[in-house]
Image (cartoon, rainbow, N blue to C red):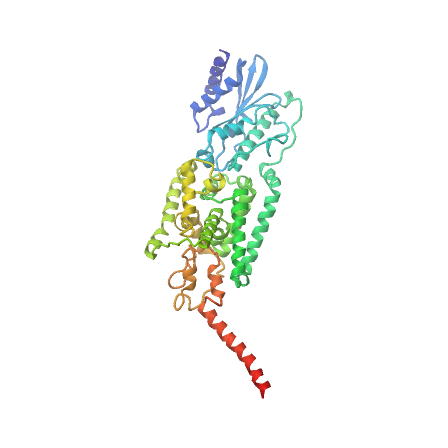
Length: 495
């Protein structure tokens, strides 16, 4: 009975103070949330809504304060992965002990489709009984003042944790006269993230440095095709297992939409700094696009693309027959990824959660972020694309990938053009075009920059003295010249 009376009091408070908890979620959602508060405080007799500067609800039993309840997005509206704050209802005791953390609404792509309610409930239930006085970190529940994160949703988990803890501490500070202990300082969310991933940052920068050196000295690296092939395979393995499965740093079209969405609001780097590996990777990709075009990401740094290429190399070793579409079909299929991109852009104009559902055309979340641990049809789609790549190289990348389509536009602005060609390319010789696994070299021997993955296969052929006709001719002339140098002294010595 007390709980019912309390709920009615809460609803009355909302009517009197409509701005206190009113947001685009609506009064219906607020009513449900306040019913939850009533269930948490069964002994409550009255409530006092506080509007400014920290909007929250003080819960009383007579004159005794039982605790505080509040929406995090009203106090700490930290943008999450979608670019929008997550509405979370938090209830705490006067000493800073958390009673409950409950997600009320959100627009997170990974939570819309990918992470189920059970996982979210397990995450938020960790906070019950914990104190916000010394802060709470995402560092594993076995460590003090720490909780486990959400696999595949690192940024979302960090924002949930940071907004809940920061909002709770601000509420406590507003009632510091009733708090027995002082609050300790807590580092910003992004700084905590960078401090916790020092090893990953070092390994990533090391890998990117090696890649840059390969690009700078590509004319020397590709001269030995066997050595370059081993080097490329090693880097692709690094991309799959370190960047992909370990760091979960698969870049996605959703990243791009989030960035564009943030440009239309009060822009802040904080949300992007929450994932150091992804931030560094995007920064490197942006720079590499200006210098060499989109091929550096697609050919070297995309984990799903690397999986496809490695599978195709294994298929070659097993003598699995390869199938390429006829040129006319290939050219038509190339347009498909641009159609998909335009459709996603149109949906993104509506909302990020809407586009999140249709962005499942990208198998990245299934294969990399969630490691195939989701519904069978998502896994079947991702596995199917990988299997197709065994007999049709990088099928997804060439014909479906909306991120590749988006990045291809930027190739128009690249500064360098280091992929060497000869007048004979496309006229008397088609070796490079025949060897290009993604079909980025046309019959005239010209490289289509918007389709090139910068794998450097054409450059190994360019310098190969046993495959490139020009280099074969040079080698034969050199060998004849060397042979004459050997024969002439021999003839003189016989005289």
